[in-house]
Length: 299
Image 1: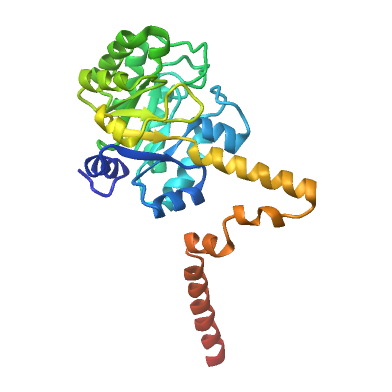
Image 2 (image 1 turned 135 degrees about the vertical axis):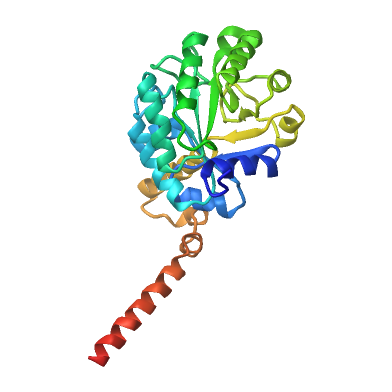
């Protein structure tokens, strides 16, 4: 195992933290904060890319290149492994192969591909349509075959619980694992015991998506651990909080003509500089200028 590769880092994190908390990050700066407070794995949400970076709904509108832009920015600034939402793979077999190769080049540790049709919907919305099991199996096989790094991980997401029940969802998940999926993402789970069933039926890590305002209750880390869950995902928690805070500031400034009443809700300049390592950059500049000044004086 190449211990320096993102995929190897994710595998190591899965061994150290059980279950592994995977935190959603919207941009490079939020990734810095997440790493500084102790998270071991980051996540880039497809909905987050669509909503935050492009102002679009999560309906399969954004492209591979749209997602890769955020992957490059976040993976380049953080040392943590990054799990990326690849929707349905961004096309047919050749497109899925390209998706995997480009994700690895961009610095991702893993991606997940889902079994919805290309015109996908948010996993917690109604009227989801799925491809048949064979088509999804082909997606997984292509993705696995395209890996240029053996440690890069392929996660299969199934949205079948809402349409086909537990029996259908587990049947699909077993087929995806047989096709080479390293992990399973069971979407829109409504009961803790359902995670237990997935974990009992499958010999790979199971991810629980603990997203707010959706179908899944906000189970605690201890509850999910007891159910056999290996990864716990919080895809848009910080994004929702940032949006609410920003809206409050916008409305306050617009209505009152000053930000004085909301200043205590803001991150201070000093804290911003601390997370960015701003003073370290300044010290480098000071040294460079000092050297340049000395050269000029010596002329």
